[in-house]
Length: 184
Image (cartoon, rainbow, N blue to C red; front, side, top):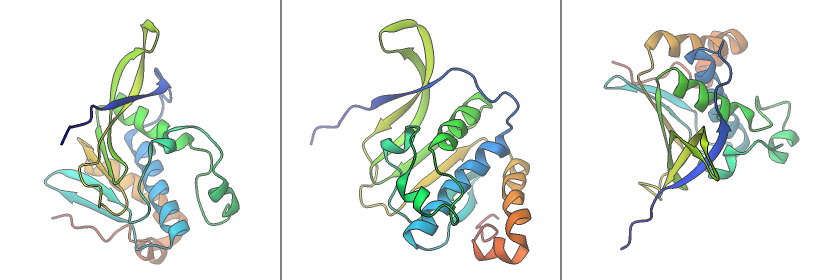
């Protein structure tokens, strides 16, 4: 079986959101997982910490390269009162912020595995932008997406989860699975 080479998807980002901290980016990633849970009516999002690495896990359809584009999402717009995001901006902003702040991100999905790197913009060798590196799925039978965060401080995750605590209250946050983690 021939191994496919990774593809590079230009996120068209140099430096943005200087004021954003890691917690702001993680809040966006949690929001995406909760939106997918709501739209697909799948089981609760799980946030866990395994050997020092944070994982945000949803059980929806899985992140696809098309989700890296900024575009109005008709499905989310049709459910505007039930979801947080709608335009595809948050995921790119989160990836850029975490990259800038030294947190390595892996996204595992049945559609492919995604990481980020800086590289020259196609046709413009003197312009470097952030690119998503799309590799074949390590597990094409995976259900949903796993966002793995290497180097994220526990305090940053707590602050990100705290936003949802403030929105949903303690009982609502538990209902969404935001505090059911497997942290040691």
